[in-house]
Image 1: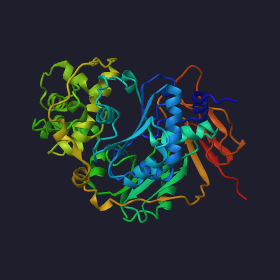
Image 2: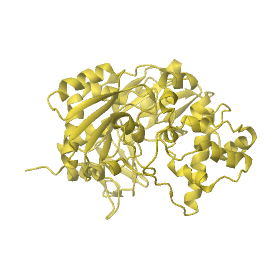
Image 3: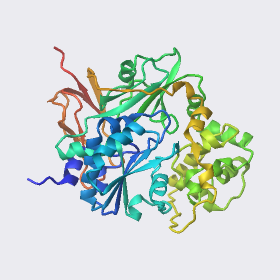
Image 4: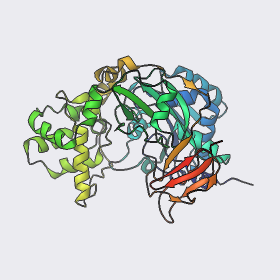
Length: 443
């Protein structure tokens, strides 16, 4: 019997593993010319994608081929940093059997993994302002997503994901964790923190979120867990209240424009001007409304904050605050240009990853975080009903119900954008609120 890939991916609960968790079955329903596998590993210190490409090149390629078949793409490209030589060699051996596939080596800069940046680097095509890659006939999927597509084709749902656990830990590693595993359990797997006073960033060091509760669960979109000393610059900046950042902006912004000059979207030609947003906040300047609404175009990569600003301010968070205020006021993104020019100095303003790592004082944590395939014993998981863009999943299980790993526990609401969720371990459902808690049965 022929497998319907889109339905299989939908049933398996596959979402974008490297970003906000956009349901993958929606992307596979489109028709495009080019399918891009994003293996650029955008954030510093992350090692998940390079390990997956090196360890499972066949699955990556199968996922890419299946995606191409579903979307009608005639060309499949794996965007991968040139420095990942082991991964490139592993993939080359597989793709040589399919002349539709190719590898596009990328330089090591930040944020090479931003979809708009990646597409321009590979195809020299520009995604419209406020648009999607689909608007120019392109689909982009993360490496982990492609592996999940290959598994979904075989009837396997998403129940776990590979995560890099690094920073100030005793044994940095990359390993597979059941969805819903606590941060605390992940830190134990990495030998615990190597400092007594620490904080945890979930996601990448730059775009990740500061987490105070170590019982916070790993989700389908968790790529990294980073431990840093409590006094670290990144911890202090991420932990500062937005209201405080606004006050400091008013006191310290020097109107230098460096935040705009390093903005990846500005360099692609988009009308995004973080410096003018900062000026409006700091000086009460009566800017053209188009400058303020340009906050809708921000991808919150943090280049302006963590590299551009010489005063230690946070233009990225100010952009987010302005965007959220505009949304609250009922405004929508008015920026929809399709015809614009790349900034003439873009090539010279790319941010070298080594310099970014040094600027963020992360050099001491540049460990390899090797991949491990050891089994892990998890006694409890807390699986959030919302791990994706769209509506939360609706529970289809009850408290006290005995379930097996892989069983469906949450479905997509009728007529909504969403994703299914599945049990990541076998056990008994002990609680259902915003998350479904499963405990292993005590012997």
